[in-house]
Amino acid sequence: MTPGPILIKQCKRCLKSFSESTLGSGNTFGATFWTDGKIEGPMLPDTPDLVKCPHCGQFLWIAKASVVEEIDPFHSGDAWPDIPSYEELTEAEYLEALKMGIAKTKSQQIRTRICAWWKANDPLRDSHSPEQTGHSAATVENMRALFQLLAKEEGDYQRITMAELARELGDFQAAQQILTARFSDDKQDIVRKISELITKRDTRVASLEFD
Ligand SMILES: [Zn+2]
Image 1: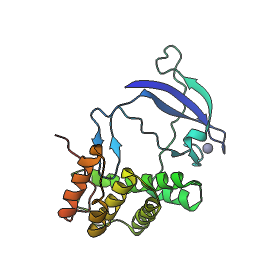
Image 2: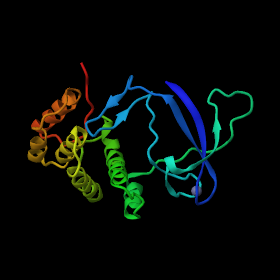
Image 3: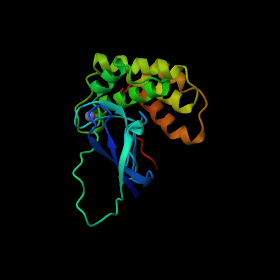
């Protein structure tokens, strides 16, 4: 992993600054792949698109925030400026942002709904967490809305995500039906994993193991 510059950006509401660490390059070495599409890795950039100002709580698209300064990650000498990082949204905040209409484009809506879904699944990624008792009504509503948005899109990623949403919602027949389509070779591992979980009538998010 090569660190990229640390960007100091400005909140357009309170005009205070926050920082964003960037990567010069990343890779999936040592990463964990999940059936819901999330990839967690030590060498992957993980900046979400929609973040929260650490000072005033404003939701903002981080790519659109203006850069006021770039700091060299290898810089030495002067002390680091004491500027807090942006904050990540919770599931409830992503859903609130959607109600506020902050996601204007379809891709922003899809991305924001996926982030909310991942947040709902995060507590279940720990194998020691208790068995899933079912998603909240708000989570289910978000998953259904995401399914509808993806149904109008084309592509393997969209179809696999729809199958995973249907599986996690307990609609195993719909999930199985979606997976009868042909998928490219690099998608066979995830398709096989989701199919296995459908057979077991398992609705919980799972990690993929590679041989
Ligand atoms: Zn602010």
